Length: 159
Image (tube, rainbow, N blue to C red; front, side, top):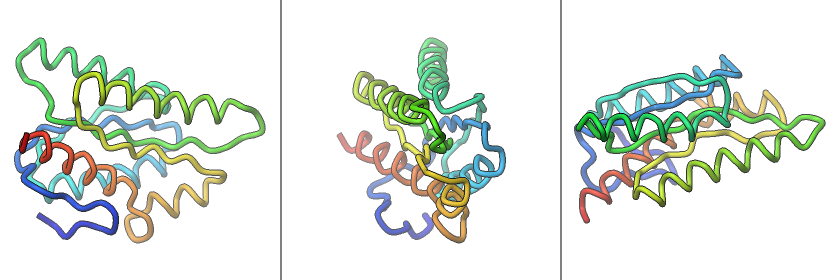
């Protein structure tokens, strides 16, 4: 497994995990940078990746819930998920709703189903801040979110 980055250590064994990556593509360039980081971290862990795209951050929890139910019904459950997206503050309160509700939705799924989710939804004031956090050579928040999910998968396997 590749060396973990600061604050996102992977402990235990998550090799071979089946991980769903749901990415909001509202901000294409930022989404791609987040995806590259997550992909690199998941591949380093030997995870099997299934990637789906949704329009925006509010759709991410819904997509995870839909996929979780469908996969379990077909007997091919996911071990965890990674949520990737970006919410940039604007002139209205819409930012607060999208940022808060997407995080709440992810936490609801994670707690209700004891389902590991790495939250890589950036909440920033500007596009420049988002790119600084998403880029592989600067923030690698996509990789951090993937490593968080892998760490929780390993913890779940332990127990």
